[in-house]
Image 1 (tube, one colour):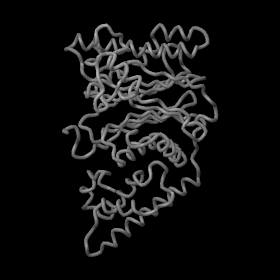
Image 2: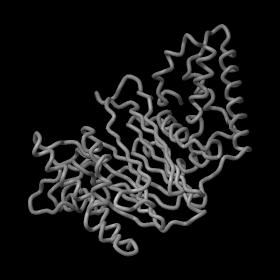
Image 3: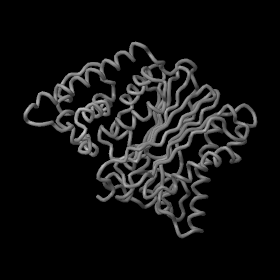
Image 4: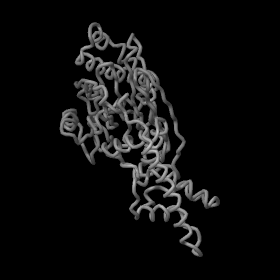
Length: 384
């Protein structure tokens, strides 16, 4: 393939912040990919007088990082400054007008990037998905263009999630075919795995068709959800490197269980990314976690259970290693497979044993300091 490294790059970029009764944490990691093509935005208090509004987004770039990087720096301004969005705010914000203003911002930045790239050196071939939320005092506006995904947890369950834009979706397929294209091996013209994206200008040059009628459309789907104080818990925005290995309910349950153990949202975000790596994700990974006041709180009982679980795993790793005796020290793969075959109580829901690999690996390396180099590149694909 040539697109993957010999071992994953696990260094992470982190950030966190709070304001407008929200707290957020984020984590991004290159993983197995040769390049890091993800980007993100997190802004509490928006320009143009929207102090009580906030905006968060994840961009998953492909064929280069240029479009993702440009969007993370400029998309918000294109949304908040366009006349459609501004007119929506003249009186009490009208939900439909805000949605229309967000859509206009996407179409404007896409056209702007095309103009820039043509002036520079011919058309830039990179593209990017975008998933985001704009949070007003009364509504959460979910914004999706591509196959990154956002979800809202409310009242202890998944309340809403965005729909991925894949070429096989009937309406997407119809638009692609109407523009003279085809869907082969679940890709646009057998090549691109998403049917909506910013950039990807090679797929946006069908004469006689408007910007939203092209093979690949830059038009986002925007959903307005009325906020529910006390019931709203958290929002997760993540690229497909996360969703490839975690279902909506799994990730929601995992985050809820982590929030009962720590209120450090960077730590929770890092645990999501690491767990997905150990579950076998081969892609770049980025996640933004936004918590409302109604998010789960740290529970002494949960903290105690977690400590007991870690202690149990530590003792089991020691036992597995000692059991080998004269046969020599087993490798980490053997240890993980042995643990995977056992029924271990109180593993984090959604994350299961993969979410505890760092604990297991730390004990293993402590007991076998000279073997630690052998474990760095062990993929979870080898674990079970």
